[in-house]
Every structure is written in C-alpha cells, then in structure tokens.
Amino acid sequence: MPYGAHEAMETHEILNDKRLQIEHFSFYTRQCQDQSLRQMIERHLQAAVAGYNEMVSYTHTYKAATPHQPDMRLAQPQQIAYGLRQPAPVTPQTGVTSFTDQQIAGAVLSWHKNSARNQMQAALECADPNLRQMMINGAVTCAQHAYETFLFMNQKGWYQVPTLLDKTAQTLLHHYQPVGQPAGAQPAYQ
Image (tube, rainbow, N blue to C red):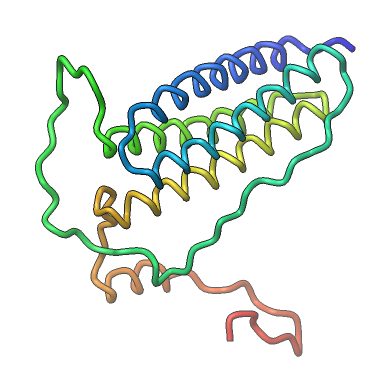
C-alpha cells in the first residue's frame, strides 16, 4: 500500500520522535529518585513502546493493529492547587551532569505536550485511515500523560497555576452567551 508524500514524511518524524522519547524516558527512569515519578514514567514508557511498535508494524505489513484506548486518569478540580505560592526564581543551568526529579518531570511534561501537538498535526496530513487513527490515538495518549505529569508536578509545587481575580475571570468568560435555543428547549447549563 503506497503512502502519500506528506504522510510518509510525517510518519517518519513521528517515529523518530517516539524513538527518542523511548530513549529519553528510559534514561529518566534510571535518574529519578522519587518512586512515584519513576512508576509514572515507566507506564508512559510502556505506552510509547506500544505506540511505536504498532506504527512500525503497520508501516511494514499494512495490517491494522487493534486500537488501544488511551489511559484516562481523571482528576477533580479540587485536586488542583491554584495560585502562585512564592515561586523561586529560575535560570538555565549549564554543565549539568545529572537531573533532579523536578527537571525530569518538566522534561517529561514538555515531551508529552509537544508530542501531542506533533501527532495531531501529522494526523491531519494522513490519507491512510489506520495511520491517521494511530496518530490521533498517540496524540490523545500524550495529552493524558501530560495531564498526569502536570498533576504530579502541581502536587509537588513544581507547576503552579496562576489565577485571575474571580470577577475578572467571570467578566472575561461570561462575555460569551449561548446561541438561541429552539422554541421550548432548555439551556444545557441550567
């Protein structure tokens, strides 16, 4: 089965990104000190290997793999610590010989965010429906893993969420109003 030029190049980029992710995450699991961070990265690593192998297999055999369901770890809004709690100044470090758990978690979060964007963008260039779905599944998985990493970092105080005054946020968001409802219909948000 032939591939279009765009999807072949995009798939090459995504496979290379997944290969590097696997290598980096393998390294991070040996570097990190926090057991829960290590376990989280190991789960993410397993998903990266599965996604990589699925895509490699499909590009070699053209046999669609069984689609996997992304891991959906949901949080409640009250689990998130909002507001800035005296964040310390930061500056890039040069001459680093090892990473702290905070640096590792930040790198994992950044990797997942970028991979989610890249895979969704690549999916938009795919004509092959199976390859397209693999890219979308990969993007969703990375988005979920990014959120799990954010929650871990937020709980440690490493990722603080700036806020606006309630009145400012409400003024900004309540500016938008629903589209008129058909006669007799009730708005969904009541």
